[in-house]
Image (cartoon, rainbow, N blue to C red; front, side):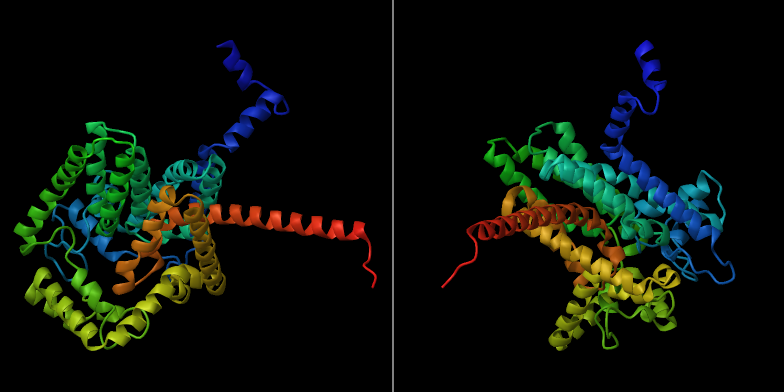
Length: 456
C-alpha cells in the first residue's frame, strides 16, 4: 500500500513518474486512448458543426437503420428500405441486431440512432488497436506493432469510416484482426476449447460480413501446414472448427429458408450487387440509381418475385452481360481495382470528403498509403514469407469480390488494419535501406576526399 501511494504521489519530474509515463506511451493502451479521443472529437465536430436543414455530415446506411428499427419495434428482421415491409435477408444479421440496442436498451429515437452507431463503430475501431499491436509484434517486432497501433489511432480512413457509415465495416475490421490473431495463436494450441471458440468466431464473422469467409480456406491451409511442420495433430481440431462454424450458421440459414424462401446462407443480395456493377449502363464503378430502394421498376420486380428469385434474375442478367462483353467487364474490374486502392470514387462522391474540401488530398493520401503498404508487404514476403503470408492473403484475396461487383473504401476497410501494419513495416525497411545507402555514399565520398584528386 505504501509503495502504491508513493507512486501516485510522485512529483511529475521524478524518475519514477517519467518511467511510468514513458512505459504507458510505449504500450498499446496509450494508442487506444488516443484513438478514442480522436474519434470522440470527430463525432463532436461532425455534430456541432452540422447544418440541420442541409445535412453535410449525415450518416449513411439506410438499410441497417431501418432493419434495426424493425427489430426494436417487434417486427422482426424486415423493412430494409422504405415501402418494402417484408421479412428480409438483405443484410447479415449481427450488425443490425447490435444497432437495435440503441432503441431497445437506450430508448433512442431515430435521429439519435446515427450518433449511437458512430460511437458503437468508434468503439470497434478503437479496440482494433490491440490486435493490430499483437499482429505487428508477432510478425515483425514490438516496435512495429506499437507504430501500427499509433498509426491506426490517427489514420484518416479509420477515423472517418466509423462516423460516416452506419454499417458493419468497423466491426468487420475488428473481427478480421482478431481472427488473424487467433490463427497465429492456434499454431501452438491443441485446446479443444480454443478451436471451438475459433469456429464460433468465424461464425460471427460470417454473420457480420460473409466476404470475410473468403479467407477461411487459405488461412486454414496455412494453419494446417504450420502445424504439420511441428508434427501436431490437426484433423480432429479442424473438424471441430468446421462443426462450430456450421452450428453458428445453421439457425440463420434455416430462418432464411422458412421466412424468406429458398436457400440463402447469410445474405440474399449478391445477384443485385453483381448486376449493379455489370450492366450496359455502368461507366465507372456501378449504377446506384438501379437499386430497388430508389428505382420503381426494380422495386416492383423485387416485390413481385421475392428476394431469392429477384437476385437470381439479376445474377443471370449480370452473367449474360459479362459473357457478351468480356472486354468491358475487365475494363470495369480495372476501374474498381484502381478505386479500391486510391479511393477515386469516394473522393468525388463521399459527403464528408466533399464537405471538408479534401477530395484531392484524400485521393493522394489513400493512393500513397496503399503503395507504402504494398512496399511493406513486398519486404515482408521477402524477409519472412511464411510468417507474412496471412497478411498477403488479406490484401490480395479479400478485395477480389469487390473488383467483380462494385468497389468502395468502405468495402476495403476490413483489411485496413493489415494495411496499417505492413505500411509501418514498409516505412521502417525503407528507412533502414536509405540510411545504409546514405552511409555507404558518405563513406565512399570521404574515402575519395582522403585519396585526393586523381591526376593524369
